[in-house]
Length: 601
Image 1: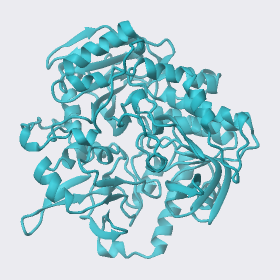
Image 2 (image 1 turned 60 degrees about the vertical axis):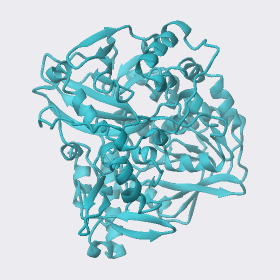
Image 3 (image 1 turned 180 degrees about the vertical axis):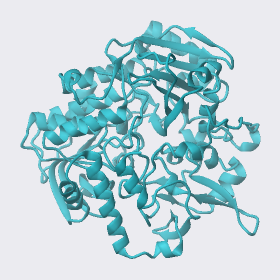
Image 4 (image 1 turned 120 degrees about the horizontal axis):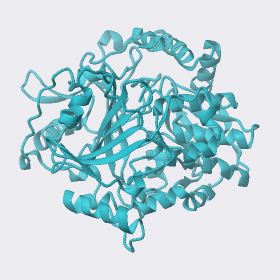
């Protein structure tokens, strides 16, 4: 483990703490962990934790401690900071926006707020990267010695899995690309962050945006998790799927009016080092069927990276499944027990584990992408190409196009534009063409596995987006969950500790970081809902859908069940904010860079 992560661990890191306590906070129940002694620690303890986290940030970014600490304190401690453009989220979309802004006009003051301990630490993707947007942004990326190790896709196959076999299927045209490479997204984002800093962008990690700053019906900036404000001419929201500020803005300005409900999947991934002779750089396998067939929609993948022995294995589970007994984490472990995958992974070493929600609604679920004072970029706006199951290239391009609209507007902190030009520009781009072409693939699976597969084949190989109809999503994912009594409980096999693992073992590979005495970032609107509704009707489905065991039902002395929340184990997947049947759980970004620390995802 890297030295900066070890330093953060000294301030309080690791799975499982003491049972959470519950405190009333503006009508909600805020859940935190720790003893009463910890809960009443002095403010100096918090400052020391921030001080240690700032040192960790400096080590992670390769910059001086003074620059990192002072930059972060400027946002987290001073009343109001101003800038020409503010980016919330240092992912591929946000950093592409910031880089392009400075390329176009080096005089613009551009600031990026990132909730992770360092840029890239919360990034997770397959990742087969379509390089068109990257080529547009940085034409010399291939020659850059600092760019992460990558390999061009040499073998791109699709298979249907049964419990014992893999049957090769035709690869849809949308999944073929001569410009695709296999690479680590977390490493690409670190590289992009360095490029942004070199151009003069102020990138500030460990500083989460808590809510939008609204004035006169417009977004004029954000309020950070410490309560400090950042005022700007344009706010580019690039938090990724189900971002906290993004969702608030979408609701405030009714940006989903006339659109289908959003749809989501939960992507789970492990990075392995396999035995010599099993590694074939550039091999890309996408696998449908077992173990999800008949239970939920989803797709698995096996990507062979450039580095010796490095293989990424993952499974995406659509969150519109109806059986509350389904556990995406355990389905992923079963997926690895397929004979083909087991033979690949046996004798190897699992290096890292993570999980993240992703957009699956497609074009029908994309909200209006501009609002008074800002824009939605990348997955914050649902721009993932569902037919390809790729979204990094569309995210980057959205950031580029939004920045290029600066040539047509004079942004200032006093005069906020409506930014409709960005939406028009995106509609004219290849991004919108891709989303339109694959719009009918995902909705077809709502009518059953066989219909969905047949529809996807017709759409992908014959119609290619030319159908005179558009299929729609009828329900929100939380509304599809049925009562537990109507479904048979699923008996999952026990992990073997070699190829399959339990959650706690997997979490040790997520590099979770949190600070001492940190308040919880998870809230309940009503503390009675878990025991009275979710446990009694849905068999405590929180224990199943969460891939980090953050939610546990414990038996009290009275014999009643009570929801215990281990917020320190959260890997920011957002599944709880999506799948909870009554929308009783609210996820907010934690302070001080807490969460997973992905190095190779």
